[in-house]
Length: 430
Ligand code: SF4
Image (tube, rainbow, N blue to C red; front, side, top):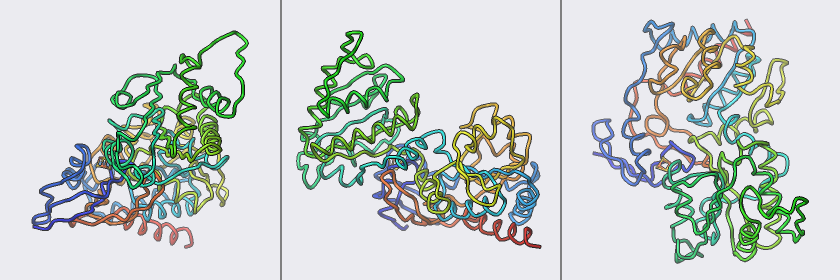
């Protein structure tokens, strides 16, 4: 038996890197320290792969790759999409395939934290590592997120409970505020819970900025509440911000997918900038899938844009309303799709999935899912972080190297995509 320590769990954006995994005869027999989701994910990482298939007929990896290359080489307006649960090395190959084929390139962030990434490009974001939050934060604000259920070790490892270098008392030394539209297990752990009406993120951030900057509020209709919460309560939050030594705001989809999307996050980012006139304050986006952050990083390095890129003119063009996955599928503009490390059958709107079923779809994934039964080409791959190594970006933009724990009979995403890229490039030049 071999025991691997400091293994990275690749399921959610926390990327906990303290996991212990026991392996016997190329089989994972025990997982320690992970949360229930992470443990289950690692224990069953190599189980239930889909058959290698082309149009429902079982075949070899080589023949499946040949068909995938033929589809992408002959498509007039293909789409390359997904990437949120694969390595940044594989993401790089996907960007290159999109460039060679003149494809639309998008990732899962276009319907989760993408607006926050766009806002960051517009106004910047004062941010910090999760280590700094653990070691320094005496004020934590959770806004529009529920880490107790979505990032199960976030509170115990990074934000709420842990004792840190300058926080020897852990939870006792911290004030915690939660802002959400409904009570959640996370709001129950907060000292102050502000239950707000949905759709008012911009308004709340604007009022907090005004109070923080000493601007007198003058509501024409004599209202004394904002988003259903008395102004006095917002004043108290502002006083907590001013008095803290180091504050961290963790924000989720309740902020990024609220009405106004990226404009909300711009205003929240400016709020954090304003807070830094009084104290030290940072914000961290609660990224969901393991390496969805990596998709934005890799696409930004290689194309200049974090999502929704179109290569049809031979150079990258960016327009989220036009080139992101859901509008592209709604307009039925694409004629083939390469989809890696995401399950559109489970995540996209029904109309989008119905359209995908009418065009050739190449799907790479370690597991059977709601896309594998109808995808034209299905290639199972080695699960990353268990049977394949590579790089993932944590929610705080820290890159972590994954370990390989067991051997897989299947190639990695990166290997399949690299082969496809070389064959597509050869076909394009001959
Ligand atoms: Fe894995 Fe996320 Fe659980 Fe950590 S919190 S063990 S990264 S699923």
